[in-house]
Every structure is written in structure tokens, then in C-alpha cells.
Amino acid sequence: MNKQSMFHQLALIEEKVGVLYEEIGHLKNAMLTLMEENKNLFIENQHLRERLQQRETELEKKEKRQSSVIKTKKDKQKRTVVGEGYDNLARLYQEGFHICNVHYGSLRTDGDCLFCLAFLNKQG
Image (cartoon, rainbow, N blue to C red; front, side, top):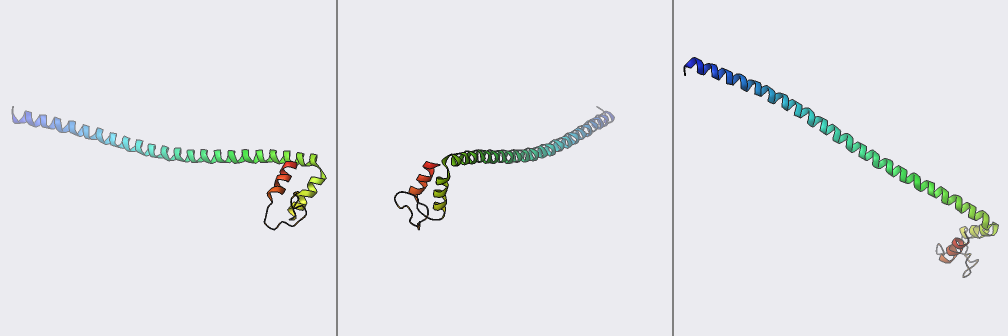
């Protein structure tokens, strides 16, 4: 092989390496773009999961409030059926007096009385 042929082959190889280097650069840029997009999607996904969890919590609270409202309505209906005597006993209990048969009429000093509460719950 002569020197000119070798120089020509070397120039061709150098040109091919340059093209490969450009392709590697394009792939590198594409990879960086994909990595950035992946990171953004990951963050967005995380925010969506947090929002979904928050939404589920809000729905659970709303359902509890609705069931509480329904229970309160039922309790009010029961109270209207029970009548005025029950209301008077409940008022006396709230004022601090016993309404149970064990200590009826005496002042409650130790907090709530289980007998009184059981009596109120049985009536309501």
C-alpha cells in the first residue's frame, strides 16, 4: 500500500468517526430529553396521587358527615316520638343531676353516670 492510499483510508475512517460522534451526540440529547420528560411525568404522577388521596379523604369525610346527618335526623325523629318527659330527663341530666333509679335526683359529682347514660340510650 502506498502512503497516499493509507492517508485516504485514514481520512475516511476519521470521517466515519465524526459521523458516529454526531450520532452519539444526538442520542445523548434525545436521552437527556427523555430523562427530563420522565422526571416531569414522575413528579406529575406523584402530585396526582396526592390529589387523589386528598380527594378520597374528602369523600370519606363527606360520607361520614352525611351518615351523621342521617343519624341525627333519625335521633330527632326518635326524640319526637319519645316525648316531653324524655326531654325533661335529658335536661336534668345535662344540668348535673342523676336520672337513674339508683341515685335519682342527687347531684352528679364524678362526671357521667353509666346508669343514667344507659337509661337515656334505652329511652332514645
